Length: 346
Image (tube, rainbow, N blue to C red; front, side):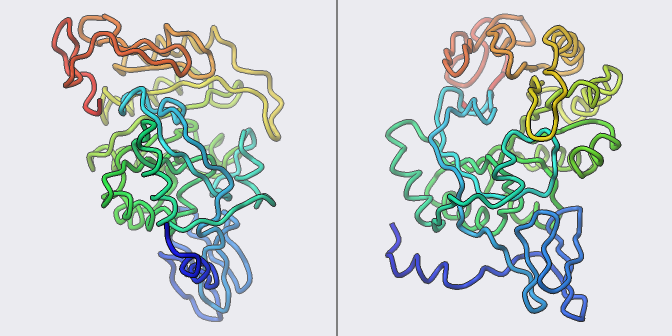
């Protein structure tokens, strides 16, 4: 652990943000995400965590954590990345989206009163202490890690040196330069692709899907393990022809990208009834035409949580909630029945 005086020194000073430019008249433009917010003095960006103080941009949530826990890796969800393992999961506050159905709105849309402070060194030490309980690294999650960029960047570099895995659970709304600087330290990402129509994306979330799809493609091409989650919201992003276009687009990147189609439940400002399970089953069947690995989230049915070999059809990983049994994979992640390569991170 770092010394107390080092920790105090860490937080006496505000952390200047990366990726911004000064426009004159004490106005700055943030370059972290595609919002590219122009921020006047004493103002904040869309994310509410990057503030202009005296013509310089500062991050207000550096080292501030709202949640920390040892979670199953499947909870991220990551089904093809060291299945059955655990990971220290940590989150801050703030987000560059305004999803009207956000389940974590208490920390994504405001600064909660119970935040604690931690240094990157301390976080890495905690992760190392839990390795004996099966911890494989650190997942930056719960709120949006992109708007926690400076802390994630510092912690991920330290974690990489200590042979810990770094995982981002993210909306994928990030510009190229910050993405390119961070990605060498990231091992896996679950990226939310919230819709394949910009009317829904802009009105309900506050973004555009093209930027997120680009992040998915760039991460995959960079060698990062990528899984994608789409929360299927009735009346919002649940048109089958639209979902089919999403499935096709993901398949063009790779048919092996695992896709999680999750069941929506009412939350925050959204009171639309929960997604019908029969509709999710229909979407699942459609997705399987294009992608090798499709899962249903928030349904809790092992038939749609388990992994099947796309070549021979045999089950290779059985999941019942967070109970995971590897049944037909060899030590190299190949199907024991037909020798098809399924997992690379086992």
